[in-house]
Each structure stands twice: as structure tokens, then as C-alpha cells.
Length: 248
Image (tube, rainbow, N blue to C red; front, side, top):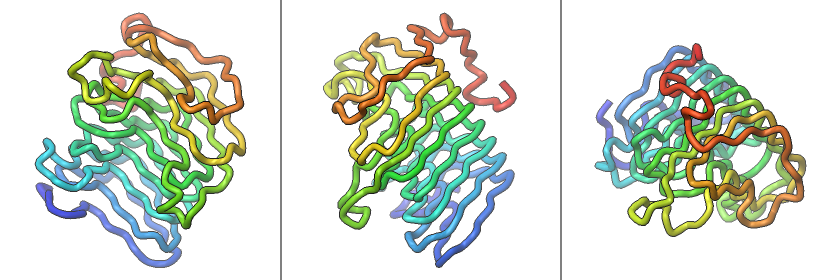
């Protein structure tokens, strides 16, 4: 706790083909919650909480909640990542395959960047979870795909993304004083990888701005059906404790 210099992380993992499982772990007040290197391996996080990374913007390093490097696989299940500061991503994975199941990733009153950053592309699946973009987000997009080819061996692969049966809550208010005000429409994706497949369906989406786009850069050929839109949490039936309690 209270480790706020450099790339200080509560847990660092490195090596070739490691297999790390975090179960019932609570991480609070570090620059980064978890950080891995780039030599392959697997991370599974279950029934755990990471919160308050880059505490109160006192860290000069990006306060990522969870940061997996260029490894093989990440699984996040029944876990919570919330409230990152210093413009870090709440969840960042360069893994070839990433799966998020029955979890909460929430900006709340922090100062994060994206909710999910998937900069090297690959396979990403998010199901039965809550994704919440806080009021003070530094980015208007929720999820990036393939945005860092220069840090991914010079290119990114065709990417397969499924976002299904989630609550997706956008809290930015589209006002002159918000950090993301000058960035335009609220959008789900910044997508710069070749498109393999994409499925976005069964999601309940709350967007108070009324200026929502799935893709602000015209990279996605798909049309999206079966999602439900609301202007407010109250209209949608979403309860505040759903950001804190995985039983809901």
C-alpha cells in the first residue's frame, strides 16, 4: 500500500510461460495494481479487488489498475477494478486472449483513461459484467482495440471482440469543464486493428449525453442489434450498489 513512485505495483510477475492465479486478493493505493512483463504466460484473477491506483493523482506514472503485457492469456472473473487516477487505464491487456466474466470495471470518481485498453488486438471477450466510465475520464471511448502497433511488434492481428450481456454506463456529462469535453461523441470503441469478428449484443447501455457512437472512426463494418439504451440509471433500473457488489 501507499507505493506511489515509478512503476510501483502491488504484484509484479515476469518470466517465460508463467501461470499466476490471484484469488481473494485485495490491492489498494499503489501506482499499478498488477503488472507483468512481455515473455508469455497466463494470469487468472478471481474474487479479487484492485482499487485506488495512482492514488489521487499524486503519482506521476500512469495509474493502471491491471496491466498485462505481451502474454498469452488473461482471465478476470468475479472481480472488481475501480477508481484509477493519473490518467491510467482501469484494465489494460496486451495478451493474445483476454476474457472478463461477471466482473466490475468502474472509473467512479477517479481520473482514469479508458475502461478497457486492448492495444495489441487479439481476442477479447466481456460478458455479464459492469463497465462504468466515470465523470472525469480522460477519454471518451470505453474500449480501444489495436491502438499501439508501434508497441506490439509493428503491427496488430485481426481482432475478435465479443461484448455481450453487460451493463455499460457512460457518466461523462458533455460539459465544458470535463476532461474529455473536447473529444466529441461518447463512443464504445476506438478500433484500429483489422476486423476479424465482432459481436456487441444484449447490453444495457446508459448514456446521458445522447451523443453515442459504437465506432467514432468508421473502422467497423458490423451493425449492432439487441442492445438497450437509457438516458439515466434510474430509467434503466441500474442500482448504485451494482458498482460495488457482484451479487447484483
